[in-house]
Length: 254
Ligand code: G
Ligand code: G
Ligand code: MN
Ligand code: NA
Image (spheres, rainbow, N blue to C red):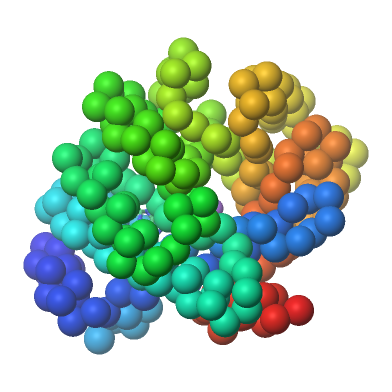
């Protein structure tokens, strides 16, 4: 596959870039975080989203060095914001299963923090339920957790949810998958099944002292209902699409 052959060169040529999507506190709409989302500035094909190349990067193993670049670029960006504005939102980085289960996770995260000078508490790692399944990732995650890094489960409820893992995993929060929150925009009431699932997940999360971020929030009706049900944070087009750092800087300056 041509794209997959071009990946290593693209990494060397620094053709990857990060977009940042705002995460807000649902009670006062304050910016509390940004999620870093990787893009590839392909010289011929233009700007490619993760769907176009992350699968290939996983298959070829390139996702590990790519992830290392994402971690360090996101930490450097957050550190630059901290220096320039006196504060910075927490920066979230998505980890592929291969990164979470790889032997270099702790070293890679520590190198990104040390290289940028970003306080560990300003970095959040997003991983999927699938990545939590093995025993070794839990040990690495525990170490990072002790370093002060925050860890959340992305797209919660859509994977092979092994709820027993939540008891022991070093996890601070969950992100509710967009697939559950879509029908929360319906004028009359949300889909009964979606509502039941979201209620159950919120109740589970809060009983275990996990914070809940609702993703895919596109309208105020959705935001209102999700906040009423107990979501602390929101992310979605209502608050901003993934955007260039300059766009986030407008929010930081105010
Ligand atoms: O917003 P966007 O279309 O870019 O994101 C699509 C998917 O790609 C999301 O599910 C997100 O978790 C994933 N993703 C985005 N950036 C990264 C990254 O740097 N590393 C990994 N592993 N996944 C990412
Ligand atoms: O799985 P993860 O949450 O990391 O995925 C991010 C993906 O969701 C990206 O493709 C991003 O562009 C998309 N996204 C972010 N906010 C919204 C939203 O409010 N609505 C929709 N439909 N997609 C969104
Ligand atoms: Mn994510
Ligand atoms: Na998201």
